[in-house]
Length: 262
Image (cartoon, rainbow, N blue to C red; front, side, top):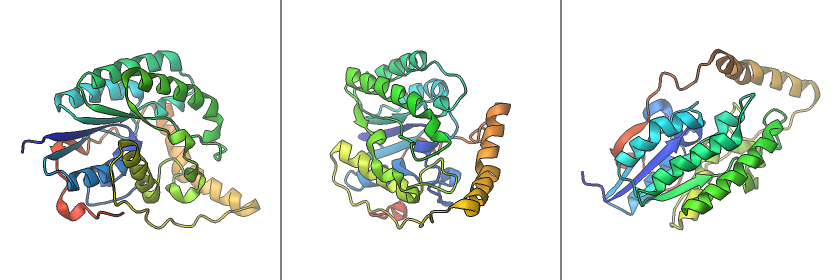
């Protein structure tokens, strides 16, 4: 098929769709980028979509593996979010890292495509990830500068206060839930200035636990999610080691996957 409009999504688990489970899809997830592609494709019979994002990828890996592949697809719209997995590492030179990010964005912008970037989330509500607020704030300021220099659109995740509701997050407390991904799709569509029919699916209520209940819940979370995450970091492994990109080539999502709402 000769696609006249081409959306290529780059990044890590955020863009792959982790947390928004859908066993009918490649890698078992849907995510905000799929939802945006569904909306854009409904109004454009010449629309094609590729999603090159793979969970666990760090910024330099995303630049090395995905930028040239995206350029080869001749995109008219590109989204990229990279760096979150780097910020969580014990040591990081944010200035050097973002200088390389700037080079990648320059290459994407040179295609003539509309480029969409993201700031990082303000995880002040998390005792674990909230310790990275300072790093994330520096990252965000550099991202704002890169976006401005290259005329990229910016989705300002840092300012999205609705994500302080734990219902926007999956059980692992690291990735957005289905509701969180749907909300992000709405936010992206708004930045693109496209009409949409995205509704937020019901959020699973998250009770506020205190005392012994909170301690038990946190211990279970560490065993199931945080502990394995730490082990992967220590051993140099990644949750995406055995995965390929969901949609490495331009495609149209199957019509029965387009709900038009959730």
